[in-house]
Image (cartoon, rainbow, N blue to C red; front, side, top):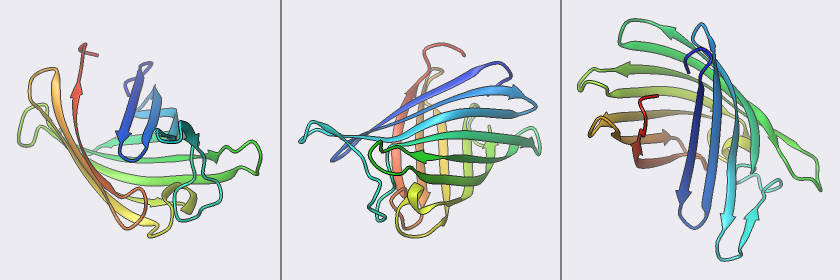
Length: 178
């Protein structure tokens, strides 16, 4: 996120649940950003209620309220290294809060094959309350390719054997240049 600018992302996933993941970040300058996430705000349409998990160690705890930070290092005009973290807690007002976290490193490549395209590959380590049962170390890959100037195709995969491992395909619309 550029200095003194905001980045906002609202991601909705639809499967047996409707899951909301929200991110807002502020650019501090020197390729540093800080922000906040609300992850895993899950709504069960059949039960007409939000779900809270703070005791089942098979699944990630949710919802999670986290702070995040990222530092980007420019390796070349087209390649960046990013190192970041998300740290926070699961809120359940009737029980004790539980810590959750993710630490990661990414290599980002831009304009390699198609102008305005981005590709990313990275590794991560997560806590059991962040990723659920399974592996703590994993990897991810992703791509963003423009279809038009304002519409981009996105694909990403979180690789591993835990609850945050998934593949998603999306289309992003950029209504304004910023």
